[in-house]
Length: 259
Image 1 (cartoon, rainbow, N blue to C red):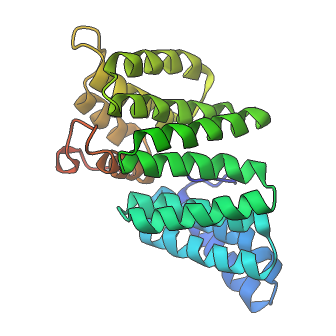
Image 2 (image 1 turned 180 degrees about the vertical axis):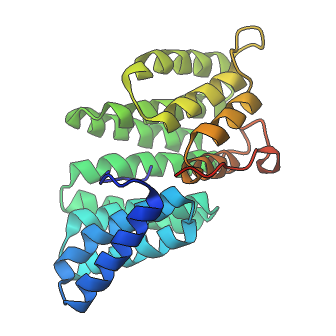
Image 3 (image 1 turned 90 degrees about the vertical axis):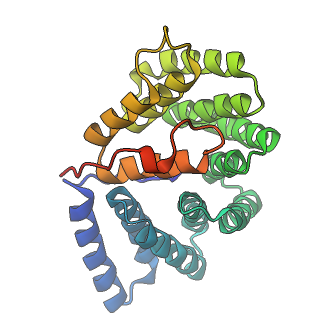
């Protein structure tokens, strides 16, 4: 999962413009200590626009700049976000290399908050690789770390992915119950992307007469309601999980731009 600092702008496009200018000025004024914070936000803003190439470039630079300035936390987050976004591009090898470097750094420097994100990303990479036991182990570590910080939203996301690991093992009934439970617990979580993920997989796993929406219905609604970058993220993630998802990427509706 990509870690975000959640600075508020009217739109990802506005954020990208401001942050690119901030990056230019910071470089011009030779203030290297400010670069990691700007780069992580710029990468996130580009990802929210659906510009995965731009996001990956920002996170690669973030890793380098953070290491140069001794900013261990942002370097670890840079590895995490780089791993997550190259995973969405389909490069499992680069994703695994980045996340393992991040986990090693976060362990050496004792950065438990960074480990929360890195373990969950490691679990997602394992899901994409169909390594169900490795996915479960990493995601359980992520939940344990997230519980220390009371990060409910992150825990919910990990629990969705734990259900997918169970589904991957062939335990459809257990996976379905895990998703029903997480849907109930997610009622107070505002993150729309998570709710669409839960709805999609319930559509896959619930018997037809019990499901309120089919997976195709969820995707059509997500295309209308999510920001373009968020929907592209959902499309790419389902493509990563093509062994579990019921619709091929080509059958998904196009993203609708949002201001």
